[in-house]
Length: 260
Image (cartoon, rainbow, N blue to C red):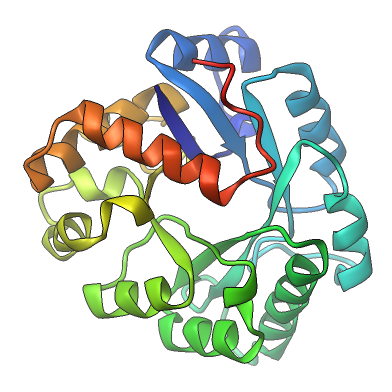
């Protein structure tokens, strides 16, 4: 069984809608999918979706680039996370690529998410783009290692991966790892301990080879597992078994053992 540890099913455009996307994933051996929240306005719909399908779980959080009328408080995030199908806080973090100028508001939002995660004892889903030093520094300052989490769609170097691993975080690789140009990321795929590795699609974004440039979907996570297996000199079954076990360990609130 495979698990897609990070996707956005509600915004995937597919004939047959969400049901067709989920059915395609299940048909390709993807037994569970974590649907990641990016803003609180869409959270009720996301929660309704994951309540409908046993093979889905959710997170709650506000993406570092999302524009909001009011910043989410620590208490509000904790309240929304108090649901059996909400297994993580995020995605949260820092993005210095899309956001420009004075970004204290983004760092304050990130800190609130970490504090909320510590309050509810659920792991974090971290988004980091062109901000790795500040991301690591804030994780350290806010004692994020107490809850740990995942560095989603990891694209930084091995040194940064080691720093994240030291903070009790897992490394999640997306379709980017299948690109020929991603040699540094393939080194991360090879060197990350097998018991700290996750795979994801980030669908509908970042489709792996052979679907690069097209809309992504959770069914394609198998191609990521196959590529990582080749890079590491292991079988896809080994990668599937390990990343599924890692997901269960990290997102211990997710009920996945009866699916797939």
